[in-house]
Image (cartoon, rainbow, N blue to C red; front, side):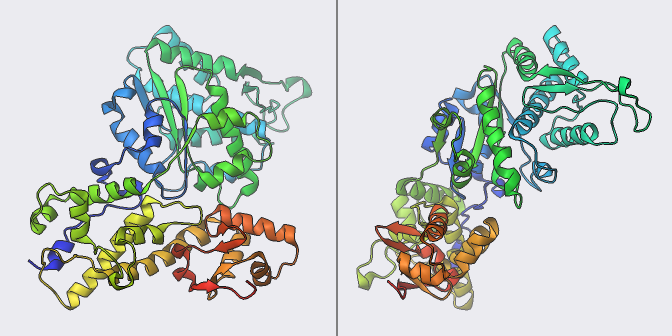
Length: 493
């Protein structure tokens, strides 16, 4: 059988979880996932590509089959694809932290409340009727309980009640309650006597009504929140106060037994949200678990994906192979055997590792997919027969894949997701060397001021572009080829 034919059968899966249709077949149970389903944590933090969305996808699709989640219902608090629904909030004027807290609380009250009422519409109890009356009173009752519709309705509610053309009532949105508006009087027709301050329903009262309705039906609702890093792109002035308010809301709602927020957030964003003296940070951190993949986890993940292709196993003549047998059939044992380099697996890990030591599953999967493409390109030019003991993907294809992966991560992560200052700093390294000191970096950026320099260096270290070792700063391999950076010391070292 031709090696090309077998290579075409291999499916590594999609590196982006929301597009990976086979995820449920090879989802890896990590420590973070175990802590989440056991109820020990509520915040899952991780770097880009480490599997936050994969955990969400697995929970959403399989929670009814997970023993620890018996009696728990999962509600998506965001839209999985398309423009993030919370971006609409970034299109509005900046509000105070307290006002953002109220908006988040109104959103979760409406989201969970409408979901509950729709689910139990045919069997309304007195507590459900009370919840229905509450949402009707604050004008947030909806027949469509999707996250996009609920948040869209809330934003419409805010615009209608906060605009100057509706002056029949005084708009008051603070962190203590939800205003209930009386009928409005159009501009020019209202007298001072007709202007009234709206009635206020406290958050505590509103969520107690929702919690009681859930409790009566023995329902615990988990609201999952992901894609937070995409919500306020281009609006850092709104991003931090809005997401700090979300974390405050998460802490406030912990007093209710039947409503739980589960937040999936990137590490760098979590640091930004909680810096500068965040109140109760210790309590927040106690409910957070970071996604950590060790080398064995990544190895198992990759082999598990390959193993799901039964046709591939038949073609290569393996029956229930070990991970090592499977890996050595697909990949070479070493990249450069003559130089005495470590195993190809260790070499792969060294190529996907960033400056913070993070080896993201997405990078491993992408590297395998690109190496497969490179090998197939070669096989189409000159086909070879598959021979047991000769790897399907050769070392040269893996080397070419690292170059393409580096360019990909430079473009779709570093230059696409960070601010202009970070982009300019990264581009300054182009065509240079990998190893630096503060002196060489100062010359590179033309910044003599040490305080300003330290801020730039810290930012580059935080995102994993630089790795600090003592007084040295090194660019990891994953970011070198994409900027044409060669290994060695920069001038000024």
